[in-house]
Length: 328
Image (cartoon, rainbow, N blue to C red; front, side, top):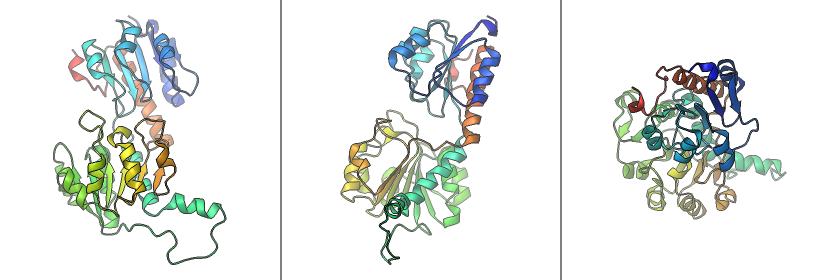
């Protein structure tokens, strides 16, 4: 089938560079014009008869959606690195290509993990609220004391692209780096003399822990109450990966009881809902899933996602194919 006859659907607006690519290639291109997540029935109706879907991580693309689209559906291009919102097995069974956008958001996310780490350790949002409320009357030697970074131990859970980039940024603070992963990362070890350890060791010895694992059945609630109680009472936990990696209720209890010193969270277990107890605590910094939110990064993600979809519908292997076994 000619590309001009193919139907493509975008579930939510992305930067214009990606939309323009799709419009220029597919006369039958359609999209959700509103910047909101479609409800289930809207999504099921919108994808009917399409050959390609460009989805966001807020869209649950499962067997029901794929079947609603129809047997002609060839590709689901995800505007994200993670693809836990897509039923990969169902896609593979239906010979549907699934793609993602790796690499382009590594630096932006690593920078933001450090921004969260420092904001949490130095209590920046809390002290800003204090100052804005007119409570700052005079400098004080005990006013908003926080954690030190120089010479402390940084623990990296998940030493892929982003975890490695976060670890490399620790050099300026002369930090000791521990990491845990399903396999060793010798490049990281060489770069910052990082030490490969098991999770329990990392939890016990780290002053700062930054999470960078995908969401799978193995990583769901990886950080639970037992894990939190293995951490130092002076330690800080940072999460820019996926919310369900942390048991949010257990974390709220741990923060409330000062089991750990603080947390910086950009993702949440039941996103966009946030555990109400977390919202009441001063020792947690909360941001609305914006780790990759820079102009350049989001534009590159849009270009990559659109390219993946276009190449797949041209009959070419898309550059960032996840379920490679589908390609024949």
